[in-house]
Image (cartoon, rainbow, N blue to C red; front, side, top):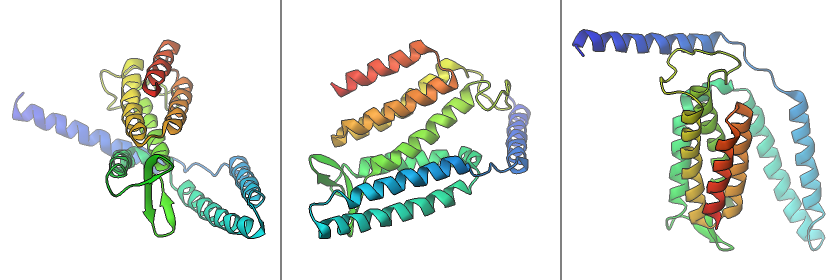
Length: 231
């Protein structure tokens, strides 16, 4: 290809990115889903009440209950902040989110991590314990959403031909990228000794792939591969 040809490709790519950014900026911001938010608050409140009633004695219940209330408050505040961000902007941020999650899952296997009940999957920060595998659930959802959005026609609400869509896009490509993302996260968490979290990862992936219209034979293959991993 000549220099002129390369220049034309570069200009076309830049034009597509600019058009995509303008579309994102002009699109209406999704409103807060109040029924979902109130249902979340109700479930969190129920959990706090259960923790208050689960201690061995009054002092024990108060200690765990107050701590859980603090976590619930921080979580709900974070929910409000994140819900104010247009989720479509994650198309720009997802590589950093996914890379940060993978780095944290690797780092927790090093001497920086702490073993708790046979699972080396925690960071100790003062009185707090942070489990990267939990944050990896959010990164997994972001990564799968982008893989499905990019490779499946109609996955974004019916648009059949998006500018910049890969020539190899289709169910096979969408499934392949999804399995790659899921497999990396699952193998790292299995190395920590946390097989239960891997089952949750698989359930998340199955739900998203099924909703996106991935053929059932691919979903069966995914289930079979994870059963093999967990043996």
